[in-house]
Length: 476
Image (cartoon, rainbow, N blue to C red; front, side, top):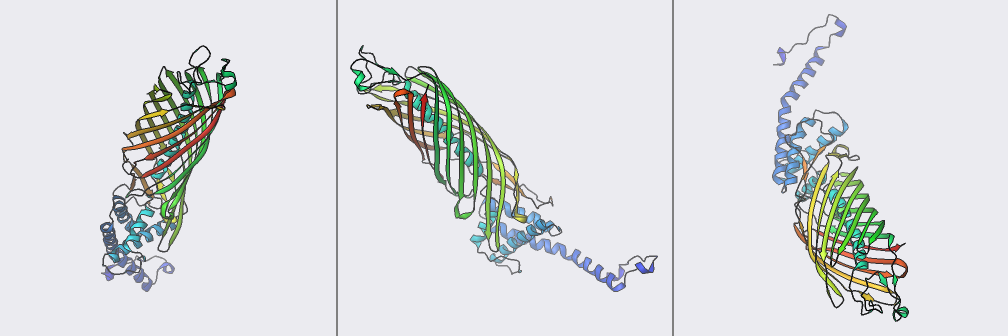
């Protein structure tokens, strides 16, 4: 066959290559063309072994993706393409050795479990936590504003007896926002909390953890921030206001797999209206987040950190209400709240991990929950002011937040050879769980009030969360 190949002669003898060099180049080219299918076939067999070992949807999909791009990448010369080709070849060859095949010299020193964990790392199993971080911050902010509304309702609650001290000299029962001084009570003197503008400042926070599953990495989290706002008492039974919130959320992935740091600012408008013993609340919020992500790629000889940054925008609406029965100073009754959240996280690119950097598509999440529960409170009158402890228990049902796909591709993959989309799939939500909350508000002389609240999520399959809020308000 080689004898049938001819190289055209140049009219310039000085440009005519020597015959040995020509035959050598042609022979090498021919051998490469003959061996290329065998190399691709070997890589495909390694990918098949990798797929056979994969035991989750994410691992199987990434294994197929590696099989699609590994062969075509061999012809690329860019540094990131060469690195990605070497990585996928090493993973495939490692799977072949673990499946009983022969060594190639490219395999990694990994056990089967370590190989599967390496696939999780390069597939960015931490990605869905980005949306969960933003939604958890939203929950902290909403809980803080809700606690403020609770305190406002207690100030205007009618016909609540405080151990007999809220009855004036004419025998009339007074709302809680009429504060008494014990020395003045006998004379029937009463001081009303000033109506109009009120300013307040709250501290907010939360901590907890989320367990790992087949699709998502587990993490510990903590949120910390503040809310500053102003509200106006329009009448004895209605208040409207606005609030600004800053929160920082930090997520530390388990097994040192990386972290997410989020800074969020939120603006809310809210109001509450009491109608006799019933009340209605409404909260509308817009939030913007700046998100920094790091994922650690540490396996075999690899030790890299992939970094990315993106932003999020969120809108939420919460509408709720309840009815309060009275019995010897105890206020109790049913409550309900509906909350809708829309969250969009922008697409972003990673850097710092050479051929393993990923390009991520945007992620859109919708949530709709309904809380149904019972709440109760009882005022306690002291010479310093009126304190009202509250306890609430609610069942929560999630109607949306279905499992969704977040598309991703390796930045170095310029082959266009992948037969299917590579995506990270979020887990299915826990449709039913419960919230338990406790709070205490206090109203004092000269228009000063304050509150402290705590809320825990219980009965959730994967999430443990504890949120707290505290603050004070002064009226003018």
